[in-house]
Image (cartoon, rainbow, N blue to C red; front, side, top):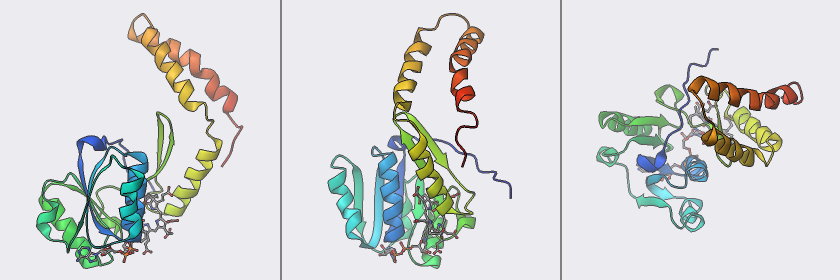
Length: 200
Ligand SMILES: C[C@@]1(CC(=O)O)c2cc3[nH]c(cc4nc(cc5[nH]c(cc(n2)[C@H]1CCC(=O)O)[C@@](C)(CC(=O)O)[C@@H]5CCC(=O)O)C(CC(=O)O)=C4CCC(=O)O)c(CCC(=O)O)c3CC(=O)O
Ligand SMILES: NC(=O)C1=CN([C@@H]2O[C@H](COP(=O)(O)OP(=O)(O)OC[C@H]3O[C@@H](n4cnc5c(N)ncnc54)[C@H](O)[C@@H]3O)[C@@H](O)[C@H]2O)C=CC1
């Protein structure tokens, strides 16, 4: 099966996100979102809210997380750029999707991949480096395990290396072509030395 998804890296501090449903799945999505993007602006609308969701407010004291305990109404999706439907009712999730689409948002429907405009991925972070993993919806568990494997093998000094490269990059003189060649020559050993060292 060909994976035609196109990954992008969203600046969630500039967007408004709504999550409808705050059970196991809403909580999981929210936890991973905040872990990666604690500067996100997130509103949660749910009839009932699991305690771990409210506890996130203690874990991220500066977070812009607005938890509203109420039944979902279509008007709740107004003004949001991204909407996640994570209730335990398929029909309700579809209603959330329809309302969100009518308001121009991109939608993720947790129980129905066919209705999703985007999927959430497994995420590995090492300072400035971020790797997003998707299995095309085939096996989120594989995505999770692959994340854990990458987390285990990525050296701690990865972020320091990126910082050094940024300093070097800023100091480079010459035209674009010369800069590209210098940076490629400098980093060639990263690929050569590591090739065939680690396998999945
Ligand atoms: C399509 C997608 C839509 C979306 O949610 O965005 C989707 C859909 C579904 N997930 C289901 C189940 C599980 N999901 C997880 C975990 C994760 N799910 C995530 C993403 C995605 N899940 C998107 C595709 C990603 C891709 O392309 O690979 C991760 C990566 C990111 C995140 O959630 O933030 C996160 C791991 C985070 C991490 O640890 O790094 C686990 C494992 C666990 O929790 O241990 C299970 C149980 C085991 C199993 O079923 O595999 C079900 C069945 C529900 C049911 O049966 O009722 C559906 C619906 C369906 O497939 O029909
Ligand atoms: N994408 C994914 O990674 C996964 C998706 N799922 C699917 O996600 C869905 C949700 O599962 P859980 O979180 O375990 O369910 P849950 O029962 O723990 O939580 C459901 C949430 O929806 C809220 N809700 C229900 N009716 C509502 C209404 N009218 N208005 C506002 N909020 C309402 C509940 O109060 C609760 O907060 C299920 O359909 C499940 O199949 C399950 C596992 C993983």
